Image (cartoon, rainbow, N blue to C red; front, side):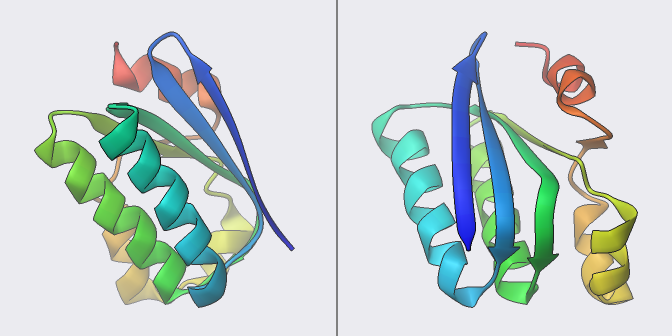
Length: 116
């Protein structure tokens, strides 16, 4: 089961992911984020991975693609809750991709990094 919970607060969208972000479920994430970026004009995102049980390369690629897109629109994307269990599941070379995205342990820290 995959679930996306969203909350818009103080100019940024908090996107909380739960379950497994895989090839199949990353399509759902893509649709949601694309709608928020293109139709709603949101430019500041916090993606919370705390309740994510597993992420595969397609899920990682989905987050990276949106990170690059948001950067093009002069926005900012921060990930939080990127816990040790997820790090162990991701191969080292893929883990390097996440080093280019700012991260925080929790949503409050991510909120402070965005500075809206």
